[in-house]
Amino acid sequence: MKESKQIRLQKFIADCGITSRRKAEDLIVTGRVTVNGDIVKELGTKVDPSTDAVLVDGKIADLGAVEKIYMVMNKPRGVMTTVNDPEGRKTVIDLCKEISERIYPVGRLDYLSEGLLLMTNDGDFANLVIHPSSDFTKVYEVKIFGAVNEFLLKKLRAGVYIDGVMTKPKAVRVIKQLETKTWLEFRITEGKNREIRRMCEGAGLTVDKLKRVAIGGLTVDGIAPGSYRLVSKK
Image (tube, rainbow, N blue to C red; front, side, top):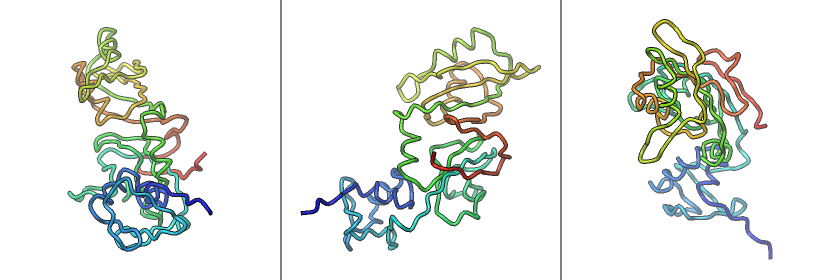
């Protein structure tokens, strides 16, 4: 008897390029997914892609229908890192409307931050990048108001508690001292919400500009703000 290759429903939806695995879980629990005609709300549900019919919002989820897209975008300041925004603000999807496949941002880069943002329709890849165990180094250049001396650098390196967990950068250094402001380089491996801004606040510093310049070996070199480059999975 042939063994059925069952996978979790949220993984299957992500593999079809419909959305990320995390968002797929939301679709399931809100009753927007059917398996063989029945609404399924249990996150532990497994399906066999070769025999089960999965529909999301009434549309068939098909593994073979999707070309995998991997994009490096240079997100400008004042653009939402979401697929859509209820307040009508510009989103990263508005910057790549010519891409016909449904893609979504990997992780977050807040409204006032700019720089490197990965976008894809490959749920496994997205999960790999954002999972804490992946240990990818993310490099940020941060302009703060005022001068930064050794005492403040030590404070930044010591870290702060975010949501009850001690969070500290892998490294932080001064890259340029201006007359009234300072450029710092932060290297972090996590990606908590507003992590660098909160570390700066903990040291009594105010951020003027925040730009992510690299994730792992990928950089935004040569990509103008608001533009993107398609890359291979490798």
